Image (cartoon, rainbow, N blue to C red; front, side, top):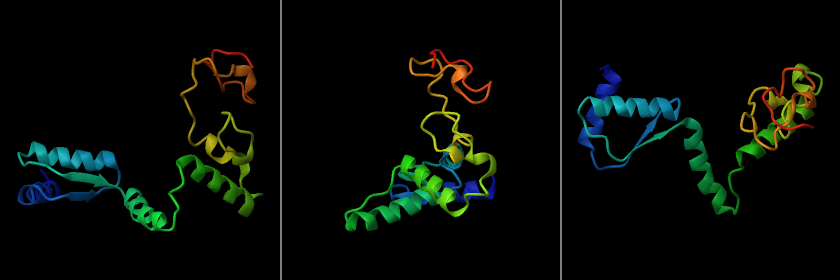
Length: 143
């Protein structure tokens, strides 16, 4: 066990019932750290893993709620980023400005975050519907 996990296990043992927030690079990594502390034989209770992003959203949410606002959903964040890129850097988008290969995704993000949920479903598009030959392989429906 490394020094960090040993210190985390000791903290969890001494403050057993208090709420603890562990700031980690990702929730997966944070949960792995907590698992390692638990495997070391120390009880891990009331520990919650946070990322810097989730911590910022939680802090901002209370301030936004005070003014009657809320945090934008993930889809709105993508659309806002798309509009910002297209407004500020229209000539520098390069390959990101081509038509989206998946219906509904903004062009700059369609290649970065492809959706695989439509494969084989009734609403999926056939390969001929895409502007590139290999896109849409495995889809069940026609255009």
